[in-house]
Length: 508
Image 1: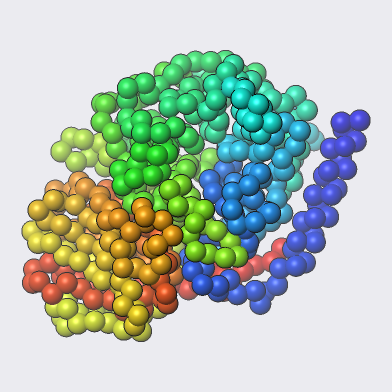
Image 2 (image 1 turned 90 degrees about the vertical axis):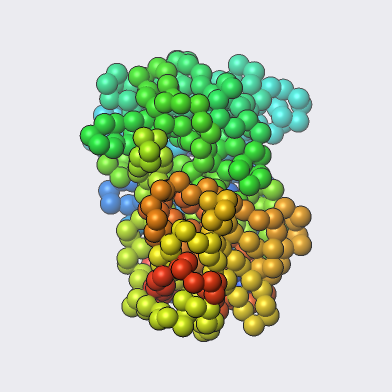
């Protein structure tokens, strides 16, 4: 009977996909107020954590927490989009729906190349999704075991999914926050390793087949930030100077460096059982207010590609968008750098943004001494070179005198974002607060790349050593730019206009 039901569900999923694709047209513009033009957002409704990100057969799959019933958080599904280049996205039918075991919370997906799970058939490699089943009835009843880990698999390269009839595969022994499994293959021991958020710690599990899990160890007690619950952990390897390190990222809400939610990280070694950090310092992937739940794609080889949710739980349900609510950050490539003997994680835009670049424009001396530039595009890369012996600022504005200000404070040795006059800010008292990021580089000249979009800004300073992400909501587009007038600060200003990713919306 279960096989028959699964077969029927597969047929329904395929038919639904055809209907949805038929509804999307090449003339759909994605041009509503605040609609980002260089970032993924759904056509409609609520979105939060990226989930199940996996690369397979030249295609990037992005699944995400999604509520198709409105633009507020609701019963969670896995939405689905794909891309060939990380820039242009094809939104697909919902991949996973809630069921009798609960809502479909966050998780990951892997390519089971050796068919350890046994889900593969006729030589087809299965993609396996590992996610949290969240039982709302159990939560309402006051139980502590309402979150459990389950599986689904795909035999058509990730386009349709079948839930495992043995779910859940990892049952909760009584931890209220027991969720967000991120799984990777640990080759030295030929086993799968799951990094799981358990209250305000991480618990590691291992499995030979993705179905049977053994507890290995815990990490995080009295380490890192503990202002709120830990969520959406991830663990991956990066190499510097010929030596490999493991990086453990953990999202926390609240307790971020500028309030609300954020992503912290630890660098160390993992032996298949235990993660050992190099030190006990608290570090952040992104110091801005609007990067959260960030995780990496699996199966990308030597590239470690990262994506976050571009919002903050302090106000995510209140931001003034209508048709849809919230979006993803720009995809980023992660690396390690050493500053005075200290290893730090760096984030930089993926090189695929070259696909939408237009002709670069260099501004002359008048702009460097305070002349306002008008008529700028709504999305572009801004490239700056600045002497950090001086403070400096850049003001983005419009004719309504909405202002978004970014800059560097020499005395405090930190970058900042000021959106206190950026437009609509009264929906939450936290939104207008000044945000800061320390400068880690010791170089005298700071190279800064800024991805500016209709309602977001992402700053990558000193080759990604200092990163900040922020959303904002102006009354009209910020199409003016002005550099602070003091001499000796910014020495070079370049703008690279970017094409809208929706101009090449491809239909399957």
